[in-house]
Length: 317
Image (cartoon, rainbow, N blue to C red):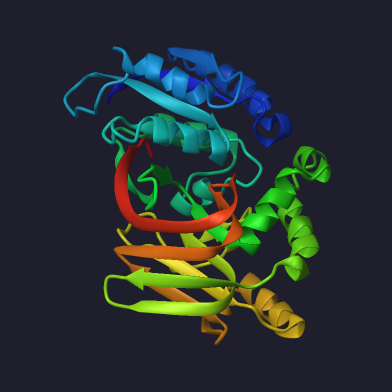
């Protein structure tokens, strides 16, 4: 079994301070188990990328099965922190990443089967002897050719508006402290649902092109979950090479309420107002300015033309 040397990249502010508390527990466990580790705290936006770049200068190396030691990068933070790290390593897919989820939503952990209880997640991480490949989405802005890796989902329309509302909610911090972080998304949804206008969309897969005049929700997802545990597409998996896209058309309030009820029981995919695309690649065009989000990061309000496919990265799990 490999001897691990852990390099902990820690966002103490994740989950409204949950990251700091969970780091203390992890530190205590590692000292008790006599496992060598070094800690790197994020101190400002995008600091993760700088830390990773420093570690690439001689510390982090591609995985080799026959090496007796493994300098392992372990992220302790939320989905946003992990998003920054995987993008800093997008040209190094064979450098493994360990993950200890400490955010408010933790959708990536749900999607790939990592425990959201810190002690269980740490125990599993220390028991792993080799990494496994996980599929991530690769989203390219067709106009600028800018590419980013996506852990969870990219949304245009109502889900992006919900993310923006939740991110700026004064109640989010309090709910996180009460271990009710997912309720911040529910509250944001209730305040946003009936304010979202419809918008046009063009979807191109490898086999078809389809236009929508009155879309309401448009979410491209890497695994089932968004919004802190809502299974927007229960059939999606980060262990396959498919891109999943869900579109919901603008409908009457009562029909929307019924669709939401079906969503929570994972029966919404049969709705005639919902359209689902699954393909190895697809392109999404929204010619009318809308709010967008990628892994919970606000993309602003603009028109979008995005091309999606999948790629793989090694995770220590």
